[in-house]
Amino acid sequence: MASRRHEVCVLGAGPAGASAAAELERLGVDCLLIDRARFPRSKPCGGVLPWRAVEELHLPGEVVERPLEGYRVFSPSGEAVESRFPSPGAVVRRSTFDAFLLDSLEGKPVCARVSGVRERRSGVELLTDEGRLGARYLIAADGANSVARRSLGLGYGKLALACQYVIALPEEAVEERIGGWFEVYYLFSRGYGWLAPLRGAVKAGVGGLGSAFSRRALERFVRTSPVAEKLEGGRVLRYQAHRIPMGGPMERLATRRVAFAGDAGGFVFPGTGEGIYYAIRSGAAAARAVAQALDGRELAQAYEEEARSAGLLSLRDVDFLDTVLASPEHAERYVRRLKKLARFQ
Ligand SMILES: Cc1cc2nc3c(=O)[nH]c(=O)nc-3n(C[C@H](O)[C@H](O)[C@H](O)COP(=O)(O)OP(=O)(O)OC[C@H]3O[C@@H](n4cnc5c(N)ncnc54)[C@H](O)[C@@H]3O)c2cc1C
Image (cartoon, rainbow, N blue to C red; front, side):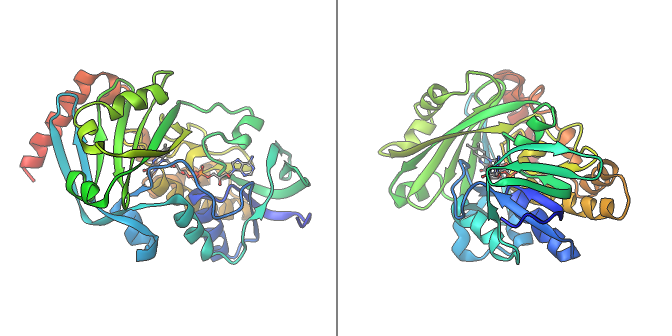
């Protein structure tokens, strides 16, 4: 790994880091992108992308595992409401999708594990398994278990656990029982379950705050009606679990020298666990803020403004945990309200 000091270091080459690096390249800012993994790598994720992401990224067909028509939301009593996208969304495999995001970059990620980050007066220092690295600014896009957050003594906010099965199911059964819909089930307090259709397979998962959201909860979810009927005849291929922020964007999006993007900044919609689109947007916003900081602006202020104008701070206004997900009764009322609204559209 080259040891020269860079203007900007981007830690993590998932959607947030790839997007930050792309925006820095577009702005002509020197940057080094680092990830401990070699790509393509997999990431526990439903892989659900809203239509806006598909449109903005001009996502090519070969990256799309299955086009998505929209969301279907279920209440505890089985009330269902559909919300159709104006144009197709997608379900993707993260190994293919993340590699696609990196493809367009000139500077490919350097493989190194970062074990610590120190903030200095004039920049940041990263401790890697191959030595130290310096940069004037850091974009920390190192996911939900961010080493950068931990090193700088910042809390994680509301960090949930999400776990999922990848279940093989004949393609005709996927088509007939789920089709092109991302199904979200509000059956629990402080969390939710979901089904995401792949080709010849389904991802079934649960996520939420607290120790209840374990593999045991996932087992219960896949045996609950109507999920059990939809998965009948399926065979579990893989179990995966990973942390996911559920409290919305962190109060402090940046320190003097470090901007937090993607999961490391808490940019996830807590009602469905979707974070990919927000990772991409927050990565780009962090890059624009860092470019301004290199010109003398205060980083935290620039990032707050960029995040706001990218529509990311509205994620703070949706207090799903304490409203919709507070209890099954709250969820029931919410879905019924959505259903009523849908009739007027
Ligand atoms: C089970 C589950 C299902 C989900 N389903 C969906 C979904 O359907 N749709 C959706 O939009 N979102 C979903 N999410 C959320 C989504 O996966 C994340 O929001 C998204 O991956 C965030 O992107 P990111 O770039 O911030 O972080 P990540 O994708 O986690 O990337 C972080 C990168 O940093 C690297 N890294 C971490 N630590 C270090 C280190 N110390 N040194 C070097 N490199 C490091 C990692 O290798 C990784 O490549 C799901 C999450 C889970 C857990």
